[in-house]
Image (tube, rainbow, N blue to C red; front, side, top):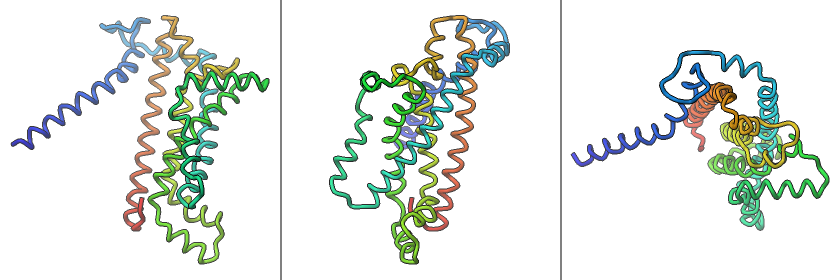
Length: 270
């Protein structure tokens, strides 16, 4: 009886917690179809005009394309460096490994506004003009630690005997990595790509200080929030991003579960 009450209490707590997290998000697509520029109940009616206005807004589309380009480059580059760093940390007994890892993880604990100001001062000293390139470099710096942590958790669970067997059979270090380690680490690589892409796509503070004439999407949205007549377009965009994110997360979860089943069937550790 006591255990049943505890389970019921946990269920109630879970429902309240999930509602607190996701109900505000679900209001975004709801109000994106509202035939009014004001976010308030009751709804005035159903309309698709905000989606049409969103597509017709050239500045919004450009900022979206800018964010997609930056986030894609950041995801690939940071995952490459994060994977190599994680491989070095987990595969070799390096001297001074702990201090080096701690140094790489410093962006975890530095406030974003401090980091953004510091990078702005640095590029000004170097005479570099703020642009999407500087935004991307700033995002890579903060994305590599996230990628590295994801890949460390994946590579630590792999069976090292498989790599040793590959090299015993005549394969080199790189061929062993591509033929053995890479396929086994693929779920972690996909997770790292998704995480770092999302991190760069959503990041505001560093982009605020390092962006030039070409704004990223968070910067553009921030500039639109001061204009009430532009807010419905932002809600329409947010709804599209929410739908795309749901599809990506569902695909990532499908890949993760499929690889987990494959690992279990082949008897490999994860």
